[in-house]
Amino acid sequence: GENVEQHPSTLSVQEGDSAVIKCTYSDSASNYFPWYKQELGKRPQLIIDIRSNVGEKKDQRIAVTLNKTAKHFSLHITETQPEDSAVYFCAALTNNDMRFGAGTRLTVKP
Amino acid sequence: GAVVSQHPSWVICKSGTSVKIECRSLDFQATTMFWYRQFPKQSLMLMATSNEGSKATYEQGVEKDKFLINHASLTLSTLTVTSAHPEDSSFYICSASSGANYGYTFGSGTRLTVV
Image (cartoon, rainbow over all chains, first blue to last red; front, side, top):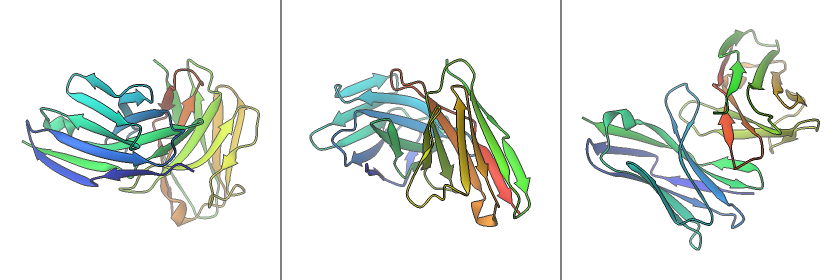
């Protein structure tokens, strides 16, 4: 089955700096890659997603890039703010089967 | 947007009892429901996938007789943790898909504590 690896597990940045989280996947049939933000005890919230026919997508301070050949995709957050602090999960969808990365705990220091 | 209502949000039960968790899709038909378990500071681990009207498909290592999943209608799926033990204490969360446009909607999660 699909295996999603996510790095780093923890990331601490200064407010205003950029944060990058990377994920790799194993199944070339995966065709949808969402990113979720999860605050403690709450449901994951979809923040951005990308489909396999697109290389890059941007939404204000958040962008995602996908390299299908290398089977990796990344989340980029620019101009980070303290409220960006949370756990972020990448995921890969293969045939209606969603697998998650291990998560990255992002801390944005004021 | 699509909404999935999950209840209860938290539950404390005694060891050996059973607990039922419900997920309802409020404004769309959930053809597929996913059930995840999340231990503290860990990722969401898929437990099982259920399609309406069919038996659930369980992930390796997940006991189907312990975690009973019912998806009898397009708007309701239930997860029953039978004979709960303290090690079953976890955050359980459902995710529903209508099969359209890769839309996956999460429930709000249920924190189960078995004492």
